[in-house]
Length: 525
Image (tube, rainbow, N blue to C red; front, side, top):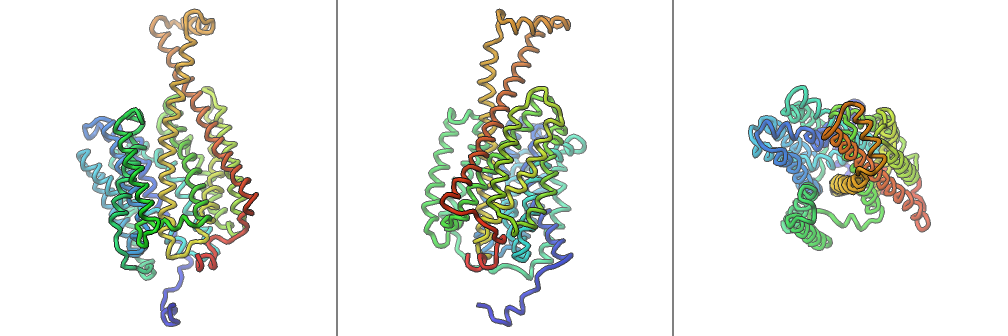
């Protein structure tokens, strides 16, 4: 135990303007990292054309970042124990900023992909460490408020990314996708180091688990590659996808077996022995997987089927952020007075209703009809993310927070990747099935077809023109049917999650009103 002299030598807790400034800068660092996951998605074609490569080759800009981030994220706990949380965060911000500036100056695809790899490696630890530093700086009774601010950034940033990316590409140049990180990165690194260097966490000479690192890197990299490229390669019809999947599964299985009882494992899997933490991670992963699938499929539907441009599609998604911006801080500030399980039940139920609502859209849906569910979805995510995070981390000791947040964010990110891959693939497959079904009805003897083609001819369109219009209508209607089916499936998943919470009450009482990360739980976690 620390002596009284040592305890008195500890710096005073941050308060007032200093704490507000630190919160702003840490949130900005989080926002910057998450933004770079989605901001380049809408710019792949422009970047590829400028660098003289095909759009298919240009997708490496996205996959390189995702793979590198997925590899470095689980290593956060070990890095924090070995070098200190503040030091790792500041170095990661500096490396991320430098890679961003070099990415903006890239004149070849090879250089840009290399810088995106470095961005991802540096960006991985930023997300869990930002959460850890915020929790450390706030007193236990106000940690829910910190979680509310952090969760708000995590949910809002992926929504703003495509909107901001489309604007910068259309109005300026793709290099500004990365240049905007420069001033933000410098401000974040300087401020956090200035305010937190005297509050560094304890460092331990923990040896590097090389076996665990190699298994983790191979397993995660191969799995991320499958999720990124599986759709292009027609999934398990491709030998490459089969081979990479087998390597990924074997590597991850050996990694779990190796790390489960390893005292100095690179990822602390002993956290999963706690029912509370494991339950929270599971719900967080499934919930975010379903949510992120909707975030990816929804704009594709607007762009491909409804005829929206990039900016219009982004503005249609943006209302998710409105209620989230309003309610996340309120929920976080009052989380110690609320029952997290009841909030989660309300969230899952609301998200299920919204998904079922989305499944009733038609090709004639107007703009306001489309964005109304997005407003409510923002509220649903505000009361989903914060209660689960607070409950999940309530029993974790301070010296294990970096490992706990690192693994939970890795699981959440993996869930998002799974959601995007499965969601888009299912959407495409259902659209193909609907296209075949609708196409079979278009024949010369079908009265509906005859009436429709007659109405087209009355507009002066005949021959191949009328068939092209009919085919375009079948295409749009097929994807509309697939969209309805997709959102209905998401509604079922959210409804099952709500039902699962109710069923668990039969053998485990509701979580009760417990302060987020109570001192007792933190001490004995």
